[in-house]
Image 1: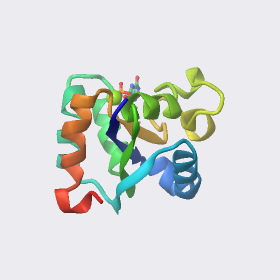
Image 2: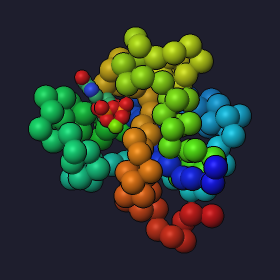
Image 3: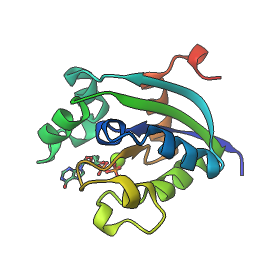
Length: 139
Ligand code: IDP
Ligand code: MG
């Protein structure tokens, strides 16, 4: 299988909790190469655009508030089958359902404050990576 890229985000709960290093270590230990990385504070309008697909969901307003409450780390991650492998390493959206050994099982507080984001399909990754990274920022 060919190398693939996905977008990962270390969300505000995990950044504030001091888990950046541990999450990046787990990521590298699982075979991902970091091709792009930056810390930023998302604006409300950026977050609404990023999560546009969820605009009609009841949790949308809370999600935007959470994602803008503090800095995040955005990561362009590469490995074979990166999209599916990163989803597996993250664990289920609700940490109560997340498997042992996953990032969300270990660090997530609840279904909203769940530590990390990952693209849900290669086509989504192809939109989400350029949302945060210019070509020159992917190394
Ligand atoms: P995913 O992050 O596992 O792909 P999505 O369904 O795409 O999950 O939801 C995006 C984000 O919205 C979740 O990671 C979580 O932060 C939040 N979220 C999802 N479902 C709920 C919910 O039922 N209540 C509160 N927040 C939710
Ligand atoms: Mg999703």
